[in-house]
Length: 55
Image (tube, rainbow, N blue to C red; front, side, top):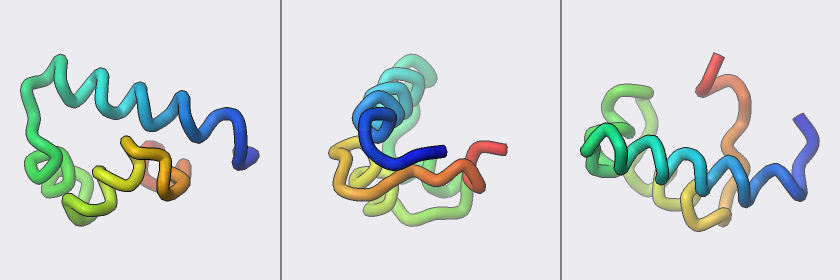
């Protein structure tokens, strides 16, 4: 996946679905084996959420 325009959309989608599932950032992080800070960075668009986490 190309970096750029999709990064913002991915972060918004992660937050949307996390909120719908009533999961905290820490709970989601535990489920996909990343840190809470990684989830925060993805949602705030500081880091690119690579496809390896969502396959």
